[in-house]
Image 1 (tube, protein in one colour):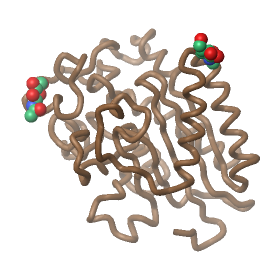
Image 2 (spheres, rainbow, N blue to C red; image 1 turned 180 degrees about the vertical axis):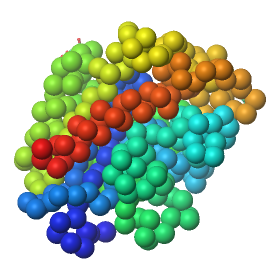
Image 3 (cartoon, rainbow, N blue to C red; image 1 turned 60 degrees about the horizontal axis):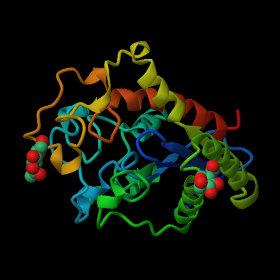
Length: 271
Ligand SMILES: *[C@@H]1O[C@H](CO)[C@@H](O)[C@H](O)[C@H]1NC(C)=O
Ligand SMILES: *[C@@H]1O[C@H](CO)[C@@H](O)[C@H](O)[C@H]1NC(C)=O
């Protein structure tokens, strides 16, 4: 799908999470000299970007049941691996494109919906901790996505024992992709490691009280089907950095989104 006008641009937002503490976020957008607004957002990534694609796949790696979505509008379990919206949802709503980013595989998605974006994210498709246990998750057809992920994976493997070196490398990669490989694109880097670390070491600043365990069940093992309608949840979700044993809570995602959106949009728009 190509933009109709030269002033239009698309933003591609990709998150590769590396354990749950080391997600990195890249945004790339096709660009031209006279871009002044963003007309669509496409998400690629793992469970941190999956707004419900796995619901339409034959996989057990899913979050389309309560208590997932308990803080989503109308308390709907949409397949998002959190109690509410994901950062990419906050991005599209802050761009006034739509309230939340629909999953590409939703059969109700119309061509018109697609014009303003969709998520291709699939939980367990990438480097998240769900990957090892996931089968039949969305395998991307898009070579561009493969290209980005291959490069990111290579960058990630190199730095397993040195996250700082990794972050430096990823920033260099982002800059190299932008200037050399994907000319005409914008590739922004945003690392959530530092904010996550701050949530965990300075929880009082944010009103968090539980930084080690998730809100669902014991908070140590429950994720996907083992965080289900029979699983008790914590009484105050706003006190938890993590929603389940792996994934950030809505509150954490909202904080992460605030900074990420500023970083990404200002880079994409060249400010
Ligand atoms: C990580 O450790 C391995 C083995 O000790 C070493 O070969 C590699 O260079 C290290 N990588 C970094 C980025 O420190
Ligand atoms: C629901 O979650 C509980 C743990 O909270 C688990 O023991 C049970 O097996 C889960 N049910 C299913 C169908 O997986």
